[in-house]
Length: 395
Image 1: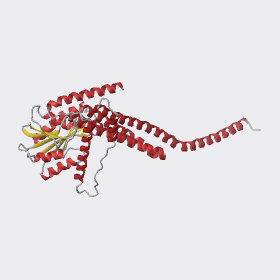
Image 2 (image 1 turned 45 degrees about the vertical axis):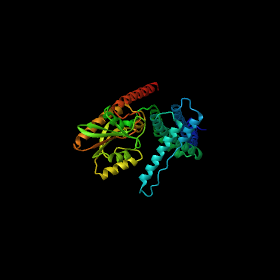
Image 3 (image 1 turned 60 degrees about the vertical axis):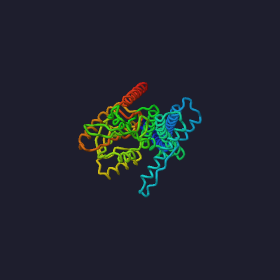
Image 4 (image 1 turned 90 degrees about the horizontal axis):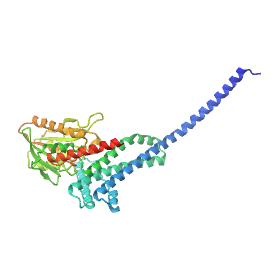
């Protein structure tokens, strides 16, 4: 007859066996079910975020439609929906010879198509408002394309049950959403004619041009230039024609200006991408041509500088991707004053007999061509900053 200890040990052994069996069952169930559960969770999150981006893209298109017509019809909304699918094919680069000229042709043709479309949709608006809508459409296209690409990956993941792709896309979504929101904010800024972060360079030039100074506008190149005195030296200050949104064609403008004026040095001022941790609006000095974009204008300016053995000085005002596209922040506006002082230092360092060309590179939305227009730009910047602070406070 078994004693109490033997009975206890027997029951303990049976419990251990049941526990082991239960453990192995749970292990295999977890091994097979966990990836499916994780995949479903990732798909659910991506579905939610994709729907939000698609709604954002629709809202941006609606804002543009209401700017054109307070009571937009289906024809206008349909035209905007069709145009956000517009694309431009980059030229073949297997043979690099002549690729810049090909790219220039594509860029110019694309710009003309934008102008034609806006003129058809909004014939009653003035040129400044039409320029703003052209740039707003570019922001709407970016938001739409981001939402469409994310939807493509989501449907691919759902179709083929691609667990690894779901994890990779999910890790990238925060950056994607930031880019989409920045494009949406840019669209709203263009619609309202508010200076954006990328307009820091033109704002520097406009601030340095006295109110009553004669400004010459090159319509074909969409650039404005004025002769000013800086540190006792004559300087030709130029920027894209404002206050309508646009970046103009600085390369072609320079080539035309150089036929009429002697130029010995170029100082470019532009917004530059800052690293995380750097403060917005900080200013840095460098060498070269401070300019982004397709690269066509930068190529033309650099070729001209090399041919004429011309020094290229650069001043950069630091902004992030979101800050460059969104309404200009007060910190960036303060950085404009610092950039002006840096420009004065560069002019002072140059030889007295040098003819200097100061180029404000960037989008000139909401930025006029002289210091009188800067006051209105400052008012719009403060108004946008106040609205953003109130919106953040409500959240």
